[in-house]
Image (cartoon, rainbow, N blue to C red; front, side, top):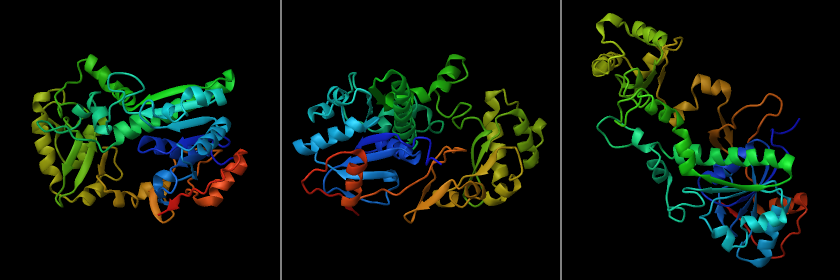
Length: 372
């Protein structure tokens, strides 16, 4: 049985931060042979969740011999991943023209915040900056309050790593027919904009406004938001459809004819106040138990530690333990070629195994990656 649907795929990952390691982890989970080229003597933690599944090879890309070794690995790879600012890889002699010259079938995946071109291409930025220019950040937060950063899930991971993974696999699929590789320009600003597709449609239909916390899916609707419970915790309510809404009211013992119509936005505050007072009558876990067999779409808001122990999450094995660290399991799942999480492989033996299996001559200089 193959270990993952990407078994046999060879990936060279140039060490980076944020979305590139996450993308590489996803590919490794799915069975790809991902080799990360790390800075010599870098202090890396072998139990780092974002490093799982990789074999680490220390190379000094400013050294001519090591740069040649990197190019030999690239010549045997299917996919290359890098996350530097535009021009950095070219300055190292490892840009697309050089690498595709060595390996015409190579898919050269480039991850940046602003993209390879445009007025901001050379500027620094972080997740919060990329999503601020696409309308995503402005849409998140309470009415009358400031925009709330959604961790770094939208720019770095949703709009970055996952679009990079999608892009390089699309290009790899095409390369297997054409025999020609290409450059994939994955920008977090582009991916974040793509994630706003639904809201662009709703805006065009007059069903979405620029008033934060006043819309159907931004916490503005009283049936799609969170409510505090008697113990100071919260439940999440997502009773969007009418049958779910009616079941919610029934479980809360609220007569529907005592509330304003859901279609009248002027009555949303009244509905919200009624539900808020109702949820304050019980603890979070009491409400969770009451709604456990319901389609009213009510669930407890769990912290990360609690989430790993939730009955449903635990039954699916959504979290695993690897190297003593609890972490998310690979996703999605495959019936015939299951994915699997593996710890990162460090040290001279791991590097030697890469050179042997990839058919590359080992550099003579002594360079090491240190495990924390």
